[in-house]
Image (cartoon, rainbow, N blue to C red; front, side, top):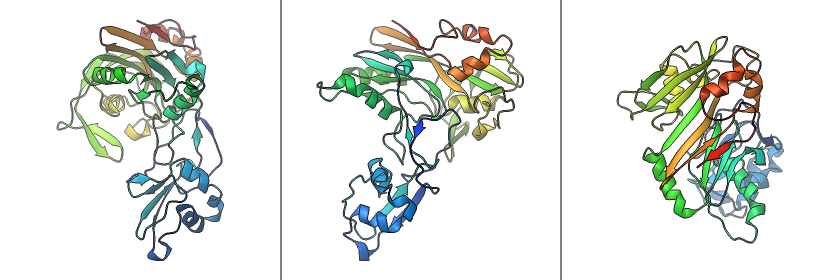
Length: 344
């Protein structure tokens, strides 16, 4: 099924446009009597009146599916028994993220490295092809690419919507393969900061296979794929611990599931037992930040560091020993800088 609901993020959201619908997904089967009707005309008769003025945007954003494929053409002639799926944003609005210079950690001919805010999708969703990180990057690069023809852009890694931090884009086709090979072949070192529920006292290696549990959930399963994560506590607060998570493998939701398996789910991660944020002093309901990335490609190792989100930097400045948290993570210089660092 191309359309599905997705959980809403709890970080500050990207700029959005008008409300479109309360029901994000609708399935329509085309009757023989209307075969040959254009897609736009058919939608104008089938959608509620309040949604009809948004049909051009709905089509342009890629929210209409004919079978397994998006259908962007308003003039597309319908066939009898066509199955259409109309996908509206679950929140009722389209996200319009804007990439700023402050979010860019490295911008050069080989790659673009971005500090993705929490709340942004990494790629297209069933209801939208443009309101995501890839779309924001393409918009950011457009003024620099005028007259240069089509430029190559490949998103090497992805982060969940709620997760902030480093996303790497290859800008050379010849480099995309080696970077992807490094990702799958152990040539990367990824470090995350996470806030978990409870007092996590000692470092530990979680070695627990993971498998799908359905409905976009994963679980520890002896029959699953091997997965290992090292956790190191950095700072303790009232009912929470800031930890460094070092995934040695790259399974979906690995850090979240392993933290919950250890008895310390991510604070606010209701999907895996984290409940709601207990303290009003803690900004947001979900904190997982991909803060340091080292990649070995060809004969070079490159490291990037993405500072913690501004809301968390401000929060740590108000708690005992919070100012030392960044240094304790050991990722790079200073808690205050808004820009990342890159070293070769």
